[in-house]
Image 1 (cartoon, one colour):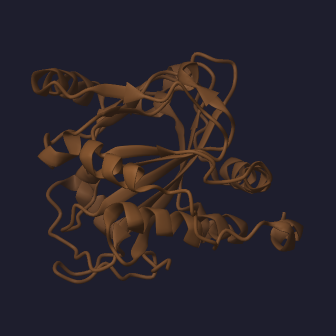
Image 2 (cartoon, helix red, strand yellow):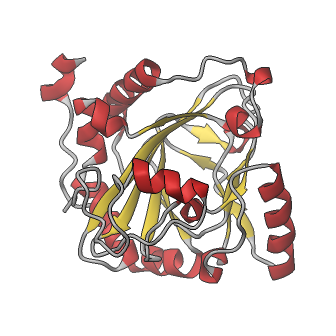
Length: 274
């Protein structure tokens, strides 16, 4: 795979197609879909790199029927940029980071971590949750980029959003679980948040959503692997807060390298991208 290094497309140019309407949609609804963020040749090249690394570093060996709800939702391989120099070129893309910064309205962003999220054929639903439930940071200026590496439709487990839910901030003390699904389902109905998803996404399209946007994904009812790569960004200038529960304690140790409370998010795992 190292021979691919010189052949990989460089992703440091600006994405000129981002519109004011998309920025406004993102800030109003908490999410937006950006089409064609990668060209076909670019996504094809990086798909080979990412799927190879995901297969190499995947530690989930149990059969689907032997896993809990979270385990059935997807194969999750974290921080591939630290393990694979080729994936690092994808994760440190200035093209992606500039979109993230412009959507948030900030000058620069840092990496929080990446995740390959591969939902297997027959893989179960991902329950409603808020990403930032896990993150001990003091800002709402956080965003996740969710990019399929293959063409996907609703039957494969399309990311689904409760529009406008990010404005409520932190909602429940629940990790991703059957319980979070039930509680958020009721909460979404009570607040009349529109539930929306794309009908289809091309490989190289991407959604961006705030850390507090409530979202889920249905089961993969197809016979194909839903290959998705995500990158989580936090605005430069964010600071570490005291972890509120065991999951934030784990994130504090794992992704922030135990930085003291009140310190800027500047560990070696959180580089500036722009």
